Amino acid sequence: MSEFADLYHLRTFHHVATERGFTRAARRLHLSQPAVSAHIRALERHFGTRLFAVRHRRVYLTDAGEALFAYTERVFNLLREAERAVAATQGLERGRLRVGASTTIGIYLLPPVLVRFARLHPAIQVEVAVGTTAEIVARVLADEVPVGLVEAAVQHPELEMRPFAMDEMVLIVPPAHPWARIATLPLEALRGTAILRREPASGTQAFVDLALEQAGVRLDTAMVLGSTEALKQAVLAGGGVAWVPRITVGRELSAGTLAAVAVQGLDLRRPLWAISPRGMPVSRAIEELLRLLETRAPSPPVGEAARADTAGDGSGIEN
Image (cartoon, rainbow, N blue to C red; front, side, top):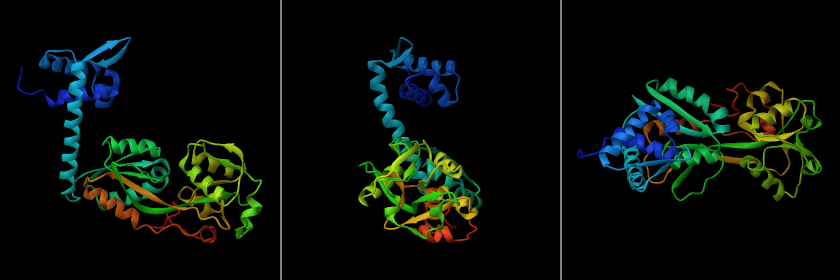
C-alpha cells in the first residue's frame, strides 16, 4: 500500500459519499461514471476494504467508508479555508468571485452591480448561485460559496451578518386603480381588501403580514402565487394589488405601468444582509463587491419614489 491515498481519488470518494450516488457525483465532478467507479476501486485497493455497499440500487457507506468520510470532511474543509485565507491576501488582478444570492437579490439587484464590477475588474471570474434564502444559507454553511446575499436576517451561531443595502416592500397597483391617485392611503382603506400574496413560507410575505398584524389590519387573500414575478405580472394584468420588494418593480414604476401606493403608518423598509462563516476572512473581490453594493443609494420613501421621474438602471436603487 502506498504511503498516502491520492487526493484526487479522495475528492471523488467525498462527492459519492455526499451525493449518495455514483451518477450524481459524476455529474457534479464532470466525470464519466466509469471514471468515478475506477477512482473508488483504486481507493478500496489502497485501504484494502470496501468503502461503499449497494443495496436495492442505493449507495451506502460501509463502516470503513463512514470512518474515511469523517476525515475527508475535515480535509476538504481545511483546503477551502486555506484557499480563502490565501485569496484574502491577494489583490484584484486575478482570481474568482463566488457569491450566493436569494432570488430577489440575484435577479433584480445584483446583475447591474456585477456588470460594474466586471468592468472595473475584468480579470476576476464571477460565479453566482441563486436560490431561496434557505438554500443560500445552506451553501454558505457547506462552504460552497464564501458569502451569501439574503433578504431576511439569519440567526445562526456559525454565521456573521452585515447589512449592505436597504429595500422596502411596496404596495403596487395598476395605474388605473383608484388608489394610484391617492398621495397617502389611509390604513383603514385596506380593511376588507383581498390581496395577491406569496406562499406562506415566503420570508417577504411574513415580513408584510407581521407589519399589518402590528397595525391591526387583517387582509383577505385573492390569490396565492409562488414568486414575486408572478405577483407583479398578475397586478399588471389587473388581477389585484400586492406587496413586492421595490427592487423588483423599478422599471415599471419609472415607466408608469405600475404605481406604488404609500400607506399611512406602515414602514416596510428592511436591510438586506451579507452572511459569511464566522471568523473567516473574505477575499478582496468580495469586499469590493460589497463596497459597490453599499455605495448604491438607499430606496426613497414610497410616496417620493412613486412621483419621481428617474432614469436609473431600472433596479429602483440609484448607482
